[in-house]
Length: 168
Image (cartoon, rainbow, N blue to C red):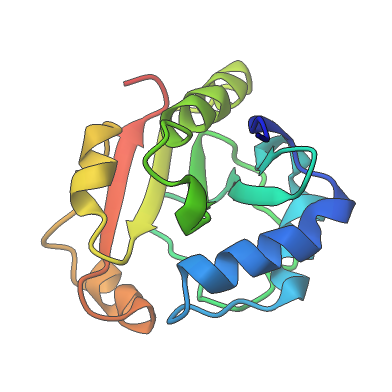
C-alpha cells in the first residue's frame, strides 16, 4: 500500500498534475503550460500529494489581487508585487484518494507558508458544487459584487468566489 504525503511540487510532477486535473476538472481545462508557469512563478505555493508510485493530488496558489479572478487556461506572465492576498488556484485530489483527509493538511501547510510571508487573505473560486467543502475550510462566499459575478462566467454555473483569512 502506498503512503501519500504532501511535499513541494517539482517540475517532474507536472505530468501527474495534468492527469489529476483532467480527472478532477473535465469542464475546466487548463493546458500543461499553465501548471508549469505557476510552478515557475511561485514554487512556494505549489504542492504535490505523492507516493512512491505517482502524483495523486496537487495544490497551486500564488499572490493575486483580492477580487481579481485569473481567466481559466491562461498564462499569468508575472505576479503582482503585493503579497498580502493569495489565490488558491486549484486543490485537486484524484478520485481514488478523496475522502481520506488529505485536503486540510495541505491548506494548513499553505496557510503557514503564506503567513510567514505576511499574507492576510486567501481567495479561490469554488467549482463542482464545492461551496460546503470550502466553508468547512473557513472560506466564505463573496456576494453582491457585479464585477466578480461577470468574472465567474468563464468558470460555469454554480461557481462562487470565496475568501478567508490566512489564519482563520
